[in-house]
Image (cartoon, rainbow, N blue to C red):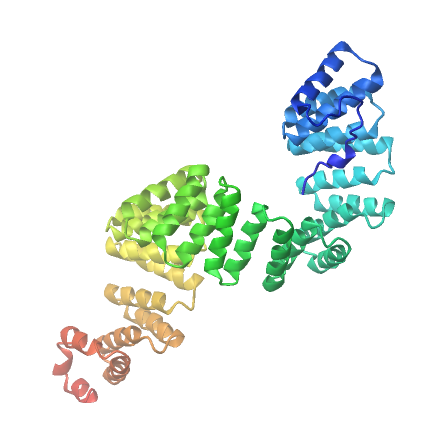
Length: 473
């Protein structure tokens, strides 16, 4: 939605209205009039035309220069101050814009447009509660004003008051069924409310009215992806890109859909396109690294993760990703360095501790490894594989009682996990609890018959124990 209402700019300057006259020439004529110093009224009208022209061309600095001249010519014009505020808003100079609106309101406190535009700038400044008050003030002055209602609905969405926003938007869509902006916002509201089918219908209605809105095609792609309609989602992203080639977010989301489908080569091309437009896009670099990692191209993956942490040293996911690549390449020291960096940034991530524990195990750092496995099961107590690895490591270290506790917990979480039962049997045999060891072995063999051959290798001395051998019959 444009924050600049072109309708507020009067277009009644007396001059050659021939459509053949070049607009640039006309603006130059207005500038010459200002240089010559026409009468006050002519100068104001010329300034209004110039400001309108530069704003339409998105040349906001030039528009601001002439807007400043306009408020000097007409210091008591609320309209002039509002125009300057709107230009400053588009330059992201929100504090100065608000000062202009405040001044305009002091000159004309009953103009609803002033409150609407100040509300828009407050919204851009993330001062949502204040923005809401301005839109409500505008509605008091001008009940039923569609622009004020639409902006109020947007603020209510941001405040997560979705039902109230929906009530306004459904009213507006009945009042202005040909207004594409209302359909767009209604679609977005339904999306936020997880009412995806209705959101999709509204985006389609908006696109019928405004088929070249790349943001609508992009948002439609997001909704379709969330609905599991991945191919249609890609089609929508392609439409957004066809309308606006320089659209890195569309390439990024398209890449994510391809990655979800396992089409990693296609995903890589999309992420590369994203990075071509946004070289410092950390999520794109990270996901590109993930795609290379899944393809086993660890060298390229490491380059991507390295770039990601260069631009964002707090991106623990990329330290984790690079560490995983080093791990796969059996460069365990480098892997451990990256895991430790990631944990410094985010200590509550059990998978990180798990990877760290495995790297420490491979480096023979058994005491550190045990502590890391302990952190995994504290953070994720239902991870039966972590309990198994924790218990198995304790067994290797000779801590049999602690090992038995950990393996027992693994079996409690997942009674069908044969490896934990097998390791429990080993611990019980060492502790000379032969009957219990035999029972666990029987259960392990029933769950995974391949463990029997492993048993014959690892339990060579077991069959010499007559009591144990007979229990296994």
